[in-house]
Length: 145
Picture (cartoon, rainbow, N blue to C red):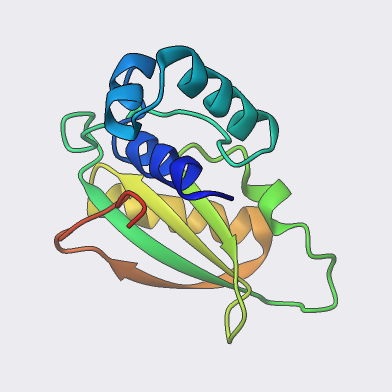
C-alpha cells in the first residue's frame, strides 16, 4: 500500500465523515481521485465500515468493564460468541490466548446491572468470569498513527 492510501486511511480513522474534497486537499489529490481510492480501499476490505462514537454516559450506560470468560468444561464446543451474541450490553468479544478464552467489553448503567449481566453471561455460556471495572478512560478508539 502506498503512502497516499495510508494517509487517507489515517484521515478517515480520525474523522470518518471527512468529505472527499477535504481528503483531496489534505492529500493533494482531486476529489474524484480520492473518491476512487476510498472505493478501492473499501472493496479491498481495508475500510470495513464507518461508525459514530457515542457518549455512553449520556446513553445511560456509564459503567464500562472487561469480563474475562473461562469455560467451566473445556470439552464443550467453543461456541461462546454465538451463545452471547444476543446480550446487548456486550460491546466487543475477543478470543484471546492465556488463562481466559474470551474477553468481553461491556457497558451497563449500574453495579447492580453489572451483577445481573454477569449472571446472564455465566448462564448462557457456562463460563466462569473475572471482571475488571474501568474507573476512567484516558483515550479510546485512537486513530491510526
